[in-house]
Amino acid sequence: RGAPQMGRFTVWDYVVFAAMLLISAIIGIYYAFVGGGQKTSKDFLMAGRSMSALPVALSLTASFMSAVTVLGTPAEIYRYGAIFCIFAITYGLVVLCSAEIFLPVFYKLGITSTYEYLELRFNKYLRLCGTVLFIIQTTLYTGIVIYAPALALNQVTGFDLWGAVVATGVVCTFYCTLGGLKAVVWTDVFQVGIMVAGFSSVIIRAVVVQEGIGRIVNDSYHGGRLNFWDFDPNPLQRHTFWTIVIGGTFTWTGIYGVNQSQVQRYIACKNRFHAKLSLYINLVGLWAILVCATLCGLALYSIYKDCDPWTANQVSALDQLMPYLVLDIMRDFPGVPGLFVASAYSGTLSTVSSSINALAAVTVEDLIKPHFKSLSEKKLSWISMGMSLFYGGVCIAMAAVASLLGALLQAALSIFGMVGGPLLGLFALGILCSFANGIGAFVGLVSGFIISLWVGIGSQIYPPLPERTKPLPLSTVGCNISSGNFTSTEIPLTTVFSTSGAERPALADNWYSLSYLYFSTLGTLVTVVVGIIISLLTGTSFRVVIECKVEVLNWKPFTMADEGIDNPAFSHIEMDIASDKNKANGLHI
Image (tube, rainbow, N blue to C red; front, side):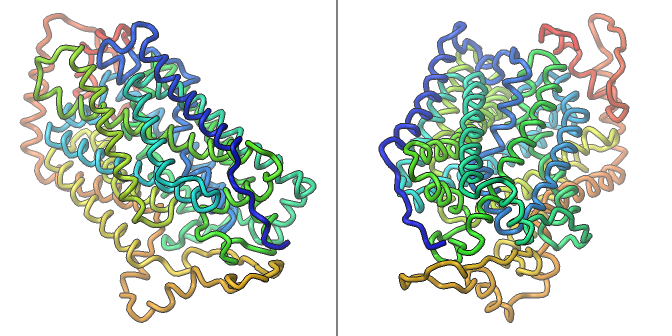
């Protein structure tokens, strides 16, 4: 198969893409005015706690299935094989942990920002630490999410790079600022539809081109792409069964269990049953999208097994393979490449909008409300909108910074691991260790964060060697190399690193080569272990604090039946704090 005459974007493709942006904006306008609009900050940030399970589930699925998934995962499977599918097990464990350990605590406390929990459990300084870390993590991640797909699509389709970045940023900011969380959730529902349509169109067309799915599976099998099982326990190997199940579970629980962007949505459900149900339905969505991405990756391999566009310099990065494939096999279908680009951007919009909304929520709840207690609900609602606008601008600016960063999928997950791990450890310490105190938690958080950053930054400076990442062979045998700019050797991976073999310190191959999925595990475990040790060493001060807390909590103007708690690991002290708050929620859970 020769290098194809690539199609370019047609007018119809731009029309389809513009329609997707327009519909997203209209949903924002609709929720800004329907049902009396956003009267209070609760309406704006929490959708008035009135959402049902299905839209929230789809929204949860959309927000972390960003363009990183649409472009990154098929390329990952093309390059390293289908071992990525083991994430199906990981997602199951993550949803279980989130629904059974973290959700009951956050839902029962009736809080808007997850970091309020840290103040209730420890002190206001840890709440501030959590908030600041979250803001840094989310703005960095959002920058990658906006910039990366724009770059990949620009280089392949000629789609205008900064035009796309600014358009996505502006539309997102627009509907977040006008419609609040309701608009975010309902645009996500629409965008999941677009993502599935984009994926499906590619899979269906690839099956037609390859004359049946059997051939795709057969090619993948002979090309070593169906490498599902690798039980190598070595933590330095990038993807094995263990790194994906253990490391992946920690990384994604940091996202689903305690990350404001996700928690804020399921707390917005009308009761706890709907909140849990939304997580379990979302699991089915995650599996469906994983299957789609895997099939796209295998189709990519089957179609390009004899002429890899990356080695043959047709594309300059692996993230560009999907758009390249779409333009290649869809060039006779005007509008369909536009649908695929819309699906990649739907992923971006859904992630960015949830980030903007969550950033606005933590800023209002954790940084503004505690210091300005006299603000009226109307004012808080306006401030929330202002914050959405502000963070929209920040995210577009971060996209410019992201243009200096490296590989897409790994960079995104590395950021979550480095910052999300220690934060997950902090919450786990509070919820699962009743004797942990503020000093222990703070020292634990700092230790976990330092260790995570050390490994994470080291691995960016000294990328792991190919024997750690195990890239699978690619071939350019079938390329008719007529034009002079093709090289059929596999330069991109091996020579870059082998030249620096001499300067690589011993740490690089033993410590910095740790699988990126373990960054989060490391951060969480260091935080918990150090937190427990320091708490036990400073236990006397803890006893005094507890006695004071109990005194305060026992003073009640009316008596209440002891309701018991859902999880034996939670202490009565932290759970009862919300008893009065729950009444205000309308529902006594």
